[in-house]
Amino acid sequence: MTNYETLEYDVLIIGAGGAGLRAAIEASSAGVKVGLACKSLLGKAHTVMAEGGIAAALANVDDRDNWKVHFADTMRGGQYVNDWRMAELHAKEAPERVRELEAWGAVFDRTADGKILQRNFGGHRYPRLVHVGDRTGLELIRTLQDHGVHQGIEVHMEHTIVTLLKEGDRVVGAFGYERERGRFKIFRAKAIVLATGGIGRAYRITSNSWEYTGDGQSLAYHAGAELVDMEFVQFHPTGMIWPPSVKGILVTEGVRGDGGILFNRDGKRFMFADIPEAYKSQTADNPEEGWRYTQGDKNARRPPELLTRDHVARRILDEVKAGRGSPHGGVFLDISWIKEKIPNAAEHIKKKLPSMYHQFRQLANLDITKEPMEVGPTTHYIMGGVRVNAETQMSNVAGLFAAGEVAAGLHGSNRLGGNSLSDLLVFGKRGGEFAAKFAKENDAGQMQDAQIEEAARQALEPFDRAATGAGSAENPYHVQTDLQEMMQNLVGIVRREEEMVRALDELSKLWERARNVSVHGHREYNPGWHTAIDLKHLLTVSEAITRSALERKESRGGHFRDDLPNRDPAEGKMNIVLSKAADGSMQLRREPIPELPEYLKQVIEEMK
Image (cartoon, rainbow, N blue to C red; front, side, top):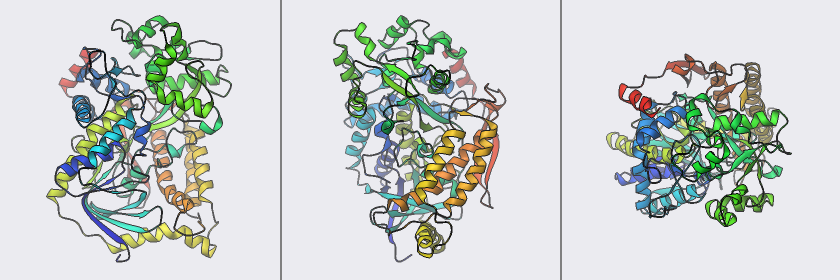
């Protein structure tokens, strides 16, 4: 232990996206010493990819909006398996978090009378998304970093956390390494906030960056924390399709929010053909009405392109399977058609969607002001994750908190677009606040040398195997690629029992292969080693997704089973909770969802 650099903090934040930065700011403002470790560079967090906006009921564009409508929309979008208290807190506190960002220097698009402009988005009844063109996440990160730099937070960039350290039932620190030089480091902390994001790299086609390997979910699980709702994976309906080098890169929902339409190879707007019963009263049944809605007409109904993401993704898949897809296996998304409706449409599109315009020009040699885009579903977000207390964001492991995508509860079975950015602001703030409180009320625990040395030994095993020729000398990249392919094919958008059973069998083989990976060279500048370490996390979350998906005997939100295509009211009253057993196996249990209190039942009834 004496050979490793040791850093001491009251609160350690793992992850430097929106949730991590907001937690760090809040904890630091409480007067505790804060350290922040991130896998990549500061400012490169996946939050910058959240382009469409921040969902908050400011009611600047439509004065009928309020926290009750936002709450009801979130619960309906999540199909009522949400943590209702998290949904309530989120809807009530999101406006304040947005105004706070503005006070810290965020620059948002404006209405004609100077208010913060809000746009339409899928599943939201009224225009609710605060935005800066299609670069909202970038502005959020810039603002939080500029504000946070004055808070005295110590940042450790390009550091990977390998394991959490415990004393009894509480966390007391983390063990990790510096990615550039391979030096091990110990982070002693009274409280830890996980803000590591999602699991997209468990799939072959994803909008997620290389960092998204399920680190936080896996670290928490192996430290004894419970995971919940892991079967609910969101496949964003619109990722780039062509050329192959860009497949999966996100095409913001803001394109549809600003009037973009979906059509198949026959030129038909297929989304009008299948509108869920729950949304029929709010959804347009003709193109003209849908267009008026996107332009802020309060009396018009939303276009079907703005139904929830799970529904749109499956409808796109249906068109492709029926042979009506685009030439490269997707459908067409067109914003250029608005030239029929407004003058100077090209300049309007460039102003509203600058990132999308440049993304397609540079990566696909396509001008979205003149031509339709080819799009298709891409693995985007996981609604499941670490089970946390709604008020404090603490897990069942004392001192271990989680916020943002790594934490579960708010979104239920399907996240509404824009709720991710308000989620990380609301619960990043709460996570940092209560982590600081925990740190003030508890002494630093004792770290065990044996835990640290075991973590170091496991991290270095791939080098030992390469040196001794032990095992089957598996290549970590091959194992990762085979895992991604298997998850894409067997536990993807459409699931079947026999395929998921086969996936579990494949996972046991992949676990065995991962135990035999070898890495050549040394610890400095060695991406193969980083990949070998990531495998434990990727396999853990993949197994959690697969076991949970097998257990849920229905289709709901981001979990669609071809063999059980309908919702089951009894299943909808249960959460599936995972925990690590004493023998190391993954245990599942069903837990009844707490019933809504009467005042929130009344809110939902009113909003109907």
